[in-house]
Length: 271
Ligand code: KIV
Image (cartoon, rainbow, N blue to C red):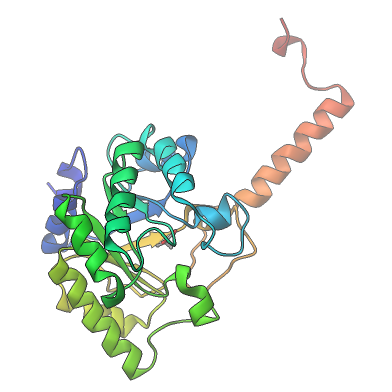
């Protein structure tokens, strides 16, 4: 039986085994109880309580305003729904950069108050001290390199990262540093496919790609994007598996019409 099929509960260890066995890892975001339940039932290996909640749940332009309390709230909702998947919680901007003691305190709050299983931090060498300190408490850490949305004001745009040699070399060095520090996996966001392949081959820990080609050890998408709930965001890497925007607005229009015409509720729907 495959590692994936054998895992009644996915752990960081399961993901390492999947990489060794050449099995692809599946990851999707979730932020609330109802959808997290469906995502877990669908058999995804990792649920990321991403700070992309800032965009898709709160309607903000960036992930920068997310607070620790916001992330803990979303992670608590997800944790109540999930039986199998590994739950990874994003550490929000300002809770781990530049001060490893604050990073540890923030990670401990996430673990104690949300019931999540691991945390994710964006960045390489600049934040490795924070990662090391969090790991001393036995908290598993997922890294995140390439396009790191919390640094949007430094980058200026959401375009593909590490196309040039200098940035690509730094990314490779950062990936190795994260592995040496003890991260159990690393997200590679929006980088050239050949670079993601090189990193995936160089690391013994799994890489999870988003806009990083097919040679990563796993893939992640934002749930609301792949379900077609958000339609104003259409990057090349996004495959939409449903068109929920038109399905939901269609259902709402039908409901309004039924109420207005007196068709709903009918006798069978009444007491
Ligand atoms: O917050 C998020 O959804 C993420 C993914 C895009 C990897 O970090």
